[in-house]
Image 1: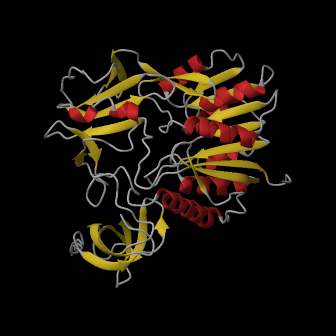
Image 2: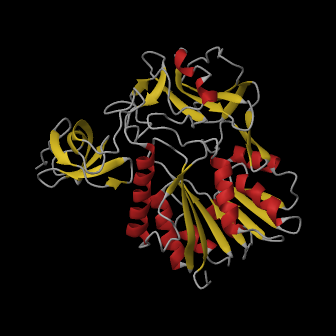
Image 3: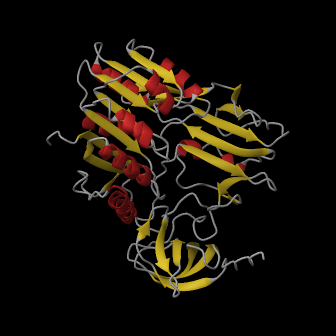
Length: 443
């Protein structure tokens, strides 16, 4: 006999006490019956009415929005963005929270992940327990830093208007202005145009130059619009069949600047979205690694060569740097960007498969900046055999970081220091830089 479908609880409301923050931009609560609720738009210690947005009877947990605040936290403010709140834009998680409290919440998430996944206290990780704001982001309560230099707009197929996705939804929230979009993005006026036929529009405002770029992803069979924006831009098109990126007009790349060097980034490729992020991370990595002349260094998941360039500058003519990157365009950019360093080599492919083929059996320094999912056990196990004096791990996800730190510990490495940076204000995201060294090495 086929089991009866479980009853959906979407729309059900519960009056609950909000518990601790959890990884993912929500807080934990429990219904009177003991079922776990992951509640957005709430804060620890509050009493709220939570309305279920996902889940059914008997599920391990439910997702919910705080739709009425019965007892507010002292850290709560009125969200500066008119599009934030239950059922609205999903781009920001903490618009309703004072900036300092946002950073404390992020610190609590990092600490919880370290303790649960690798068994480390902040002290054992060499971390002071704080998340540092980026330079220029210390604004009065109620003001939002315009930090996001790359914004991916979704297009409502019914209206042709650009907007942002609602949380865990394909529905588009039309916006007149995204408050976290950098000035260089806002001045393009993406929200004021008709993008009928487009699936998405990415706006890019380079931080190291005046370069501006728009990357269009059309719906199948749609014709590209004539792009006439409020200032000169280059335009690229994503092929809906192959995923390849093609130039429509203007440069196929933007120029970014970090650590005193200019980097070419082609085809809407990856670059840190906060204008201070690249310099902040390079400084943290180099201060942690302390490169020496003549060092052999690895830059894994190297992108367009940001850390490889910084390492090459510091290890000198007798040193060497190997970068590995899976994206073809990024590899071409990295080779272009670092052409002035004859002892820098960039290999194309996945780190897990390319690194064993290089024949490298030892390295002095290693930098890895893996994707959100982390490096994984097998890659970390390989790295721990290379005898590196120090390893810098750059992470945009504290859970993946903690998992990989546990693998490093299995391979004989300990965390020397950890630093955390709020490079994504108003969101749940946070960037960490962990410096590791062999466990037997004294501090």
